[in-house]
Image 1 (cartoon, helix red, strand yellow):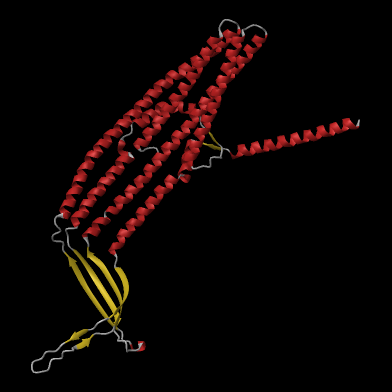
Image 2 (image 1 turned 90 degrees about the horizontal axis):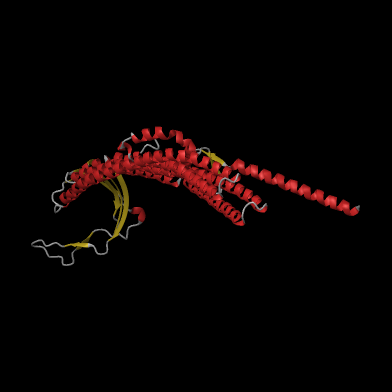
Length: 456
């Protein structure tokens, strides 16, 4: 009885430990589920805007341009500087007198002081400065270019996050296809194993079914790995911690109903909002403004100056308290007129004019290239729609074929090869259908980036 009692106590203790462990595991599982981020595409893009270093870099560039413009504008204000100097006379200058009728003094008379202390305050202000005025006109263009660069960074980020999000949806749908394939293969393998044990089928039939099931398991594991990699890529673009679990609200099939409407809306857009063209136009405007600045270097400049000095020039034998300080001040206007510099300014202007003409040709090539890309993306969307329609019908037929082949095999009216072929057809149809949806929304995202409409 004591032995039985000890066994019962040990069993109860083990049961309590198992219950406690199960409760703890359930709590941890619930906590993990609670920490999982369930996101839509718009939420992913917003998080990327908040956390991406690319956006912060673009914003700091706008801030830098603003400071640069203020630096140029400060040239209109007076420039004030102070200085102090000390000089020591090593050898004084001599004066010689040679007056007719008077003896000549061969030794001369030393003039000047031993030491000189000077404190100076000077100010200058441009009155007529054509080059400075012309450079100030570039401030708005530089600010517009920095804003367009920031918009381009946002467009690229939106495109990358969007396609990564679509990639997650594609891998999830592919996983479902392989999961169903594995379930079918496992069920078939179980049925065939029972038949083999009863002697109804050959060992070769059972081995083939077992191999089919294990191959399906390999595909399922690969699909699960693809989901993890696509989620990691999305989290990297969003700036999230790689250990934070995420999940998507939408499914790839949710986009099927929007395909035709979005194809019409997007394809009707023009290249007016294309970021590359806008940046190119702003850079060309900067070059034209540089030409205007270069032309202003031929014009005269006028500036006002004021100098104030406070100085003393004592000899060594004078005590510091007896130093005599006296002020001096000057005010004036300086006019600078460029006359000849060997033709350097003329040839500099010619270089800029040549660059302007070159940029005109480059813009034409860029626009043609962008138009080609737009046509390509639109054509890819149309082809994806055609594949989608065909793929949907093929998937419905493949599901029917798979079900029929399984029933025929169960009643002995078909072979396992028929089941295998039907299973392969279902996998190909499912993957092709999901890929066609992905191709459409991916091409649409690329076209929106090209047209510059993805963040409007």
